[in-house]
Image (tube, rainbow, N blue to C red; front, side, top):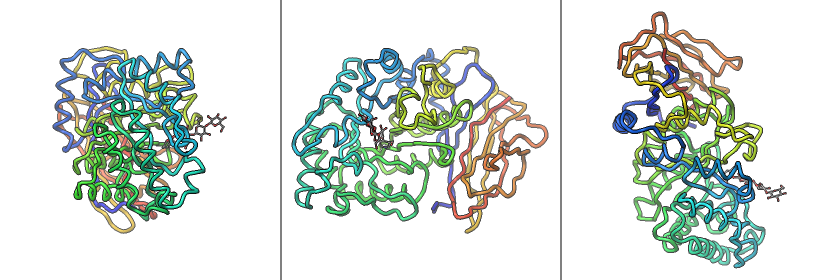
Length: 461
Ligand code: G3I
């Protein structure tokens, strides 16, 4: 599945002021951005909300919003206090806005847009052309009619919201999962062929020239066959002058699909094509420190890519999440801030309570694939102390089953019950002078899966 022989993970450090624990992860490619992050953290008063902290980093921090919850006081106040961008979770989808042909209903979507606008929040548009939540009449059209209907839908909806949407998901989820890199079957793909994406983007540019036009998908968060297919699409569009401004990475994570080790590198390679990248539907199933660390990794990856313009989490509270049982969001069902919330705010340079002076023990990790064979690869994690000396460090390496870590060196490992998570500590004396580095390594048996491991945050003592 993974074709590259080298992957690199770069996550910028959360400028912690207080806790000695937990830390910073970043690599060479992120040094420039990281330097900026560090400088800012030392001088600015820390922001105390997600939106304000992200804004200080030149980014937005948004959430998916459902119109039918806006009347709930705690929902609205959490939204209004913490976020500065919203994405209608379902209200702008085709079945909501054009349930029957040429009959448009914008009520719920308008409610969200006006709520946002009156509070100075930005709005992401989601989504114009998608195989799902498509009313039945669309699938029944012949090719010529479908083309007309698609272009009409894009034009009508974008015109209605002209000037109010910062970025539109013009086409959503057009590629298959797995190793084929092929297009997903849909009425658009099946009847209009590969050219439907290009046509949609061209129509969108004409309808609202000021809106950023995004392609949005899931399981494209690391380097893999599906993200390679999207990459090739974007590269081709840029080469031929087809309008496209951004790529959305949905970033729905859980233990079966953790934050990939090459997440930042993947964002960066898209940015290098000349498009913005956005994290559009972030949620991470789990709880406690593990969930918090994964959120930290995602935020730091975005901060490490200068063209990563914002992050949207896929809901305000766990209780209304599309996968509520996985408690994947930043606020629990009672709107209490979770550890994941504090981790995100801290990574953004904000202060979620705790205060404290600088100079605490901290470390960063970078990952690289140092060897690659057909059946296995070697990974190396380099641990670097922050601006203060440290006496010990801990990080984790998580592989995706059926992968197995068969060997490791230069560290002292312990394992979770699944055998997929290796927690690594120093081999003997873990002291590192400020800025000094050490590395440990491991071999991953692919067992058919070549994806990069997820590397946890670095905790220093
Ligand atoms: O509103 C009706 C309600 O009246 C009815 O009683 C109930 C019974 O099923 O359904 C309600 O609608 C549901 C709707 O969410 C609102 O809760 C739909 O059945 C349900 O299918 C819909 O799910 C949405 C899903 O997209 C549909 O594919 C989720 O809320 C939404 O979070 C999810 O979002 C997608 C993104 O758009 C694209 N990327 C993946 C992401 C997660 O699946």
